[in-house]
Image (cartoon, rainbow, N blue to C red; front, side, top):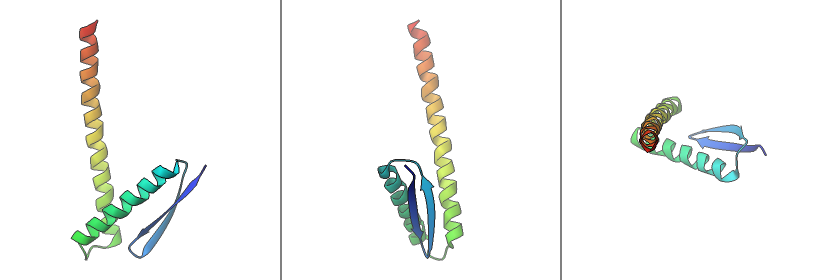
Amino acid sequence: MKRTLVLKLGDKSYELSADVPEEFVLAVVNRIQNQFAQIKNNSSDASIDEILVVMLANSVLNEIQYEETISKITNKLKAFMNLKR
């Protein structure tokens, strides 16, 4: 079932649709709002666009780090499985 996410960031609201369980929708909304508030508190004069760019960059950085970690674990598992043969 499609769920609607309503994000209130600063004085703007964003409406998005997602086909995921409600707990994921709530987790996404909460995480984005918390990150936005944290960055806004640290840089009170930053515009919404600047904050969103920082959030996007942080998300991409995290994704790259997760991919690197998964790759390392996968290689270790492959090496371990080759030793067992």
